[in-house]
Amino acid sequence: MITCPYCFARVAARRIAFRCMGRQARGGGCEPELDERLAGYLGTTAGASLPPVFTVWRPGRRAECPRCGRPTGWRVCPECHNRLPAEYCANPGKIVALVGAKGSGKSTYIAVLLHELTHRVGAELDASLVACDDRTIARYKQDFARPLYGQSRLLSATQSAATEPRDPLVYLLTRTIRGRLRTTTASLTLVLFDTAGEDLRSREMSELHLRYLEAADAIVFLVDPLELAGAAPSLTDAARARAAMNRSGPGTAAHHGSPGQPGSPGADRGDLLDRDLGGDPDSDPINVISRVTERLRANRRGRKIGVPVAVALSKIDALQPSLERQSPLHRARTPNGMLDLDDREAVHEQVRALLEEWQAGMIDRYLSQNYTDYAFFALSALGGMPDGGRVGPGGIRPYRVEDPLLWLLYRFGMLRGTRGAGR
Image (cartoon, rainbow, N blue to C red; front, top):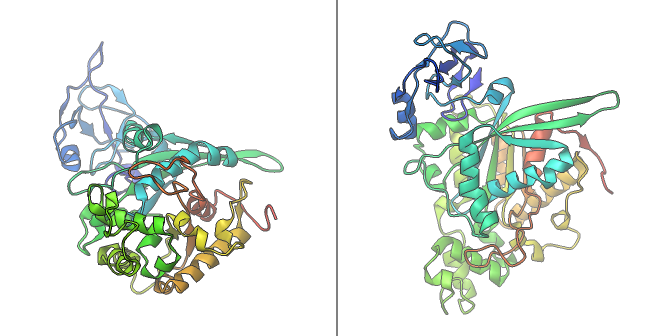
């Protein structure tokens, strides 16, 4: 079975369809025609006029179009008619669901994680990360890399899929694994699909989001610690202003820091805690986690969910000054191409203790009641406080953004674990 990385339908290998390559400069070939299924997925007829789709009795890597007789290797999903990347059909795909409330930093996290996998972390793991389709290349460049890395602008909030349909980002991750006797390679297709916070507000989620969550091989929950009311005493004034800006958005008094308004130096501390922290139930992490969990438990008859879950505190840089000097959250990960299990457990326990201290321990208890495998993380995509709508003067200095993915690679059998690395 193959899970389509676009519509998330489960498809048997024998049902994979093909699309004719169409008329070439010389020779025959089918003319483009409106593909109604693809248009239904895209929500528009623009870009949906293509050569026809057809099925064959025993699909292989190639097939002959029954209309024009030309061979084609363009395989497509029989449900939505999106083209399936050849690498995706050849390698086991892993769909990673990235979930979080609005403002938790999902888009920024994706942008920085992929950049790090392409550069620093990729070099450490002896791994390559290659986009599987042209839409992934275009979307990452336009929506993520160009504004954040090219123009140093903060990314705008992800728009709801109901108003702006999005494609997932599909990548082939390949590692060279050097053993004592021989060197091997291991590959998997990584599918990242970021949901807008408002897409998870209602328990009546869209069919696409239900398919997406149910098809996920792993889930990463991003939790904004600035949304946890109990964390307020640990925040610096700058972090508290940042929390106010997250809620108010650009162009408001909070954003500009007017005296006496939330987010300004003159604002009353108690007023900030009451009005700016934990006031929106849709931003409460436990509400987002519980909505997703209810959907995943629907067909499990009371059994715990076996999908590995990474729960990461984003924007941890805002809280690091208040942590004890010996906290593992002050420590950088040792780059040795493996997962340091001692460090992994230390970070997990520290975040767990912080949640209890911040009166958010119910997150841990709820996860233990519903999932067989979960772990806590703390990270910062930017590594420092932004400056208005731009990256701070220190530039992008990511802190442990790769940790959740390394843990998942370890769970998927693509990364070895070790004890006491670097200490």
